[in-house]
Image 1 (cartoon, rainbow, N blue to C red):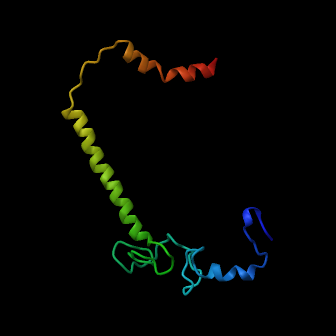
Image 2: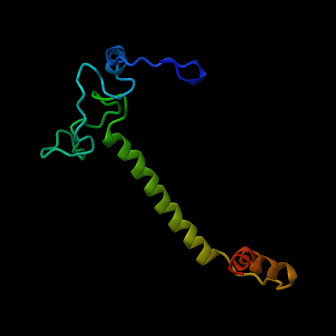
Image 3: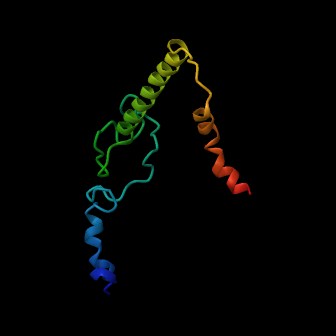
Length: 125
């Protein structure tokens, strides 16, 4: 069967099986079979410290063409710690170091205050 733009689709599934078995579509290595149930689940006994997943720390998974969940968790946790530390420093700096300044409340100030309300007010009428 020929689809638009000259792409050829074969209705026979057996011709597509070798592509699926390479692992490039499913993400799983062919030699291990199509395991993958419980990808993010933890085992009852930890084989490695602080990592309960059967794939371990990795960084590359022996089952899939991907990083292991424990390896990804380290990078996610480091981003979270970075946000907490530098967010707390930013709040401290704003509260302690910055001094409020006087703002001239002229037409420029009031235009910025009222500007976001104009589209909403127009929707109501």
